[in-house]
Length: 123
Image 1: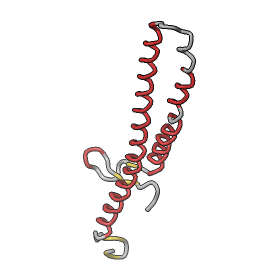
Image 2 (image 1 turned 60 degrees about the vertical axis):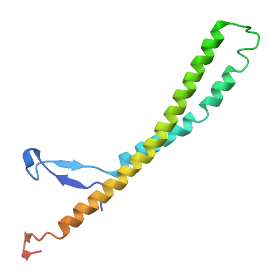
Image 3 (image 1 turned 90 degrees about the vertical axis):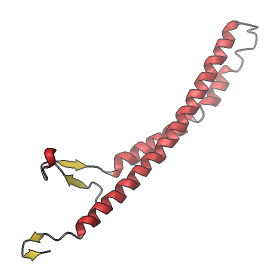
Image 4 (image 1 turned 180 degrees about the vertical axis):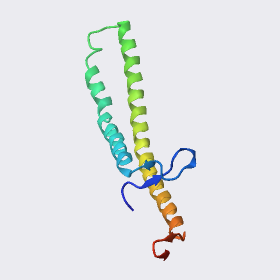
């Protein structure tokens, strides 16, 4: 099976007037990008923790510290949510590649049994 199957289908049901192309490459690159985001976001929580060390020392009971802690907690949740979403997307995109390959094979198999008149007789 080629990397870029071509299916001809035109508007209004006309066959052979357009091309529909898909390949696994863009899906796999996107899945890899999602995986990279998971990796890149991994150390961020620890980096936030290090950046906030010492902020409370000597600050006493400043009300801004409570706000800072709330903002930090919000960012930590968002970062974790982003990591989970990206991790989920990588697997889903790879699954699309599998489904496309299976659909391509099913369509190809369906056409393999069709007999059509050709040059020099029936195939």
